[in-house]
Length: 331
Image (tube, rainbow, N blue to C red; front, side):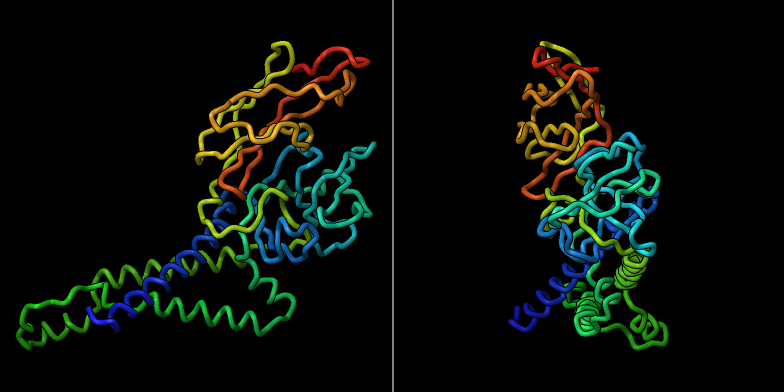
């Protein structure tokens, strides 16, 4: 095989890989809309380096009792009527309002959130795919034009009928008739299907970028940027339970990607980290911070790979001790 042919095949393959990666990330940003979830483009760096400007965060609606400290919420910003706020709940106010704070900010937000203003809790982050939206809204024409031109070039090369698509046909040329001339002019069925498939994927990607609304915040300090597409499939543990056995023991079920570990959280605070992936139960530690007169909420988080995680959508209530006596127990 000649070197020119090798370079051509490699170029087409690389272009198709780039286009497939971009479209896959755009799909993960757009697909949750079908579930009623809201994709949001991060416009500021209030929680970097965990989440960067240009990431798309997907939030899902949750009941009011699931708005616990430590969770990241998407809400209508009371300080700016035309903006959304995507910050972490720092604490619950005495009147039920939510005190929020960006991880990268030195102080809490000046105005608490009313629970009715919350649109959802962040559950998924797609890295970097929203940068064109950021550039468009901030008027940065040069990087936007450069990325659009580069993607258009990759798309053109990816749709090109390369030498690897159809093997050389050693058979003699067909008889020159009007019928064979029409057949030779028609593109192969495989090439037509490939082009149509890419056209549909481009439409899906465009829809995903179009529906995402800008927010001035970020998502989770557990979710560093990653180029893996499978990270969009990370799910949290399910079917949380609790039983008393000399203390509170939390159980869970998990049916997803092979986890690296689990974490046990109380009110959004990690109390046990790096639970082995084969475990499906953990004892709530008695660290003296619980109270008989307060109900704490326990959740479990899945860690997949080195950078992606997902928290359970449900929690279990745990009680505390009285005057330093006793152990945490299931309520």
